[in-house]
Length: 312
Image 1 (cartoon, rainbow, N blue to C red):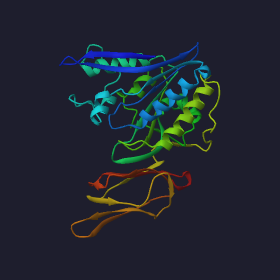
Image 2: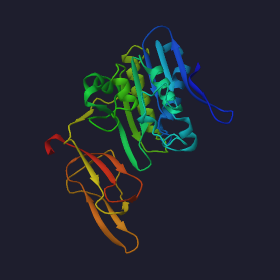
Image 3: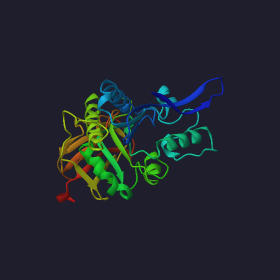
Image 4: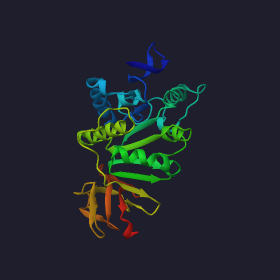
């Protein structure tokens, strides 16, 4: 059943609406899938489609409620803009919102209120147009004890427990977790694109999580992997940053093991044909982030490496 979460009038006789697909069958727990917070992140759109299709075709296997929110920032998705057009706002920096605030603050408040009290919320993000990420769950240190068991059941290979990104106080995940509604943040892929294999793998993980929570009557045909990396601590991740401005070229891809001294790529200068800098791995580990947009400036993020414990 399609339901309206919030609705506001637009200036020229139009309506701004956030909708959800409310799928329920009997009493049971409630799980929510949210995405589209940033308009250039599209991986979650396909996951929403896959989950809704699976449930609609097997409603007898559902024992509880699944709410699917495919677009928290529909104007951004329509115009392929990361933030909310015309407001110059990052939707994921204004939660829990304000009922008496501006239009977007009111929208954020209504979304937050509608999600509050769920047994679990899964907040799906893609990377931006500059970086490609392997599928990962990002968890704040303050919520790790509660969320890591859920993340492991989801079966995503990489769990990153850290202090800053995606756990800022005004994000949806932080707002929900700090008030008792568990929320996992999933990050994968690249902005403006859809990776079918990543999305299908995440669907299997969601089905497994629903099965373990008693919301779905059977596990997925392909069970999630057990060899999950839990990355924690400030010294566990090495950031590769550009030391010069130029064009970053690489033949390497993420989700691969790299070794100390291995070349990741070069920053070149098209005008002179010179190589300005060689990018070399400082350690052995898993390359879980790689830059895909080639134009870089000094300090630009080129990649992230999970350092194996013995190399710290």
